[in-house]
Image (cartoon, rainbow, N blue to C red; front, top):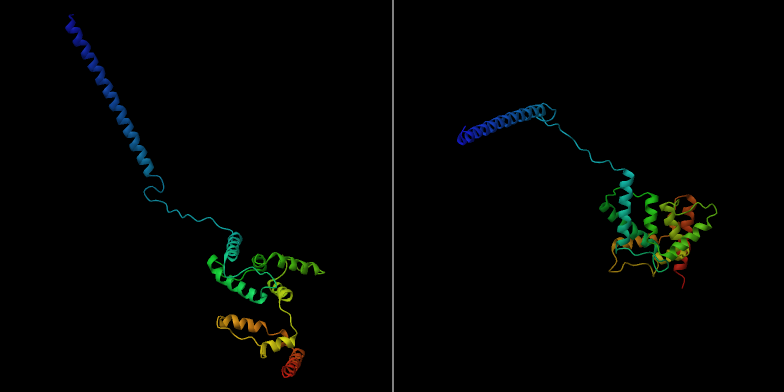
Length: 237
């Protein structure tokens, strides 16, 4: 066999091998395509593919107590940052006016933090306490210590009892007659031009002694006696 024939034979052999490999590759591709088609058909039969399943995602439940505590904490911080009310320092401040302004600002800020109802004693007292000066706190602590039954503490006292204690300890003290004369006499409280009617009415009402708010027969008798004594002293020179 000549060299030319050998070369042609080898070329024919290589061509045949390439053709066979090409046929094998085509068979593999066809097999893969068949597998892919089968997989797609299988996926289509899975639930929720052709008809998606509606999924409702529920937000994580928040403990109401934790949510409430967070709101009260934010309210407390807002009360400490406000410039509408200053810390109560004792003798240089009117405790009744302080309580009025405190509660007014509290009612203003509550909706801003999402609180619509009244604060409990345990929520209110710490906020109120945070706006008392150190000397006032020390004085209140001494009052607590004088309580024989050790009933009154920061953790047990009610809002009403705390207000009463503060007025008794830091309020201006006069005799009943002196208060009546101050309220209705020549030196009576008058509204200044820079005072609002609301503030004046509150201060005017606060100056009325408890004896002038009778409920029982004996209290009415005491009230009548007070008016007689006050009228007599009013006309004395």
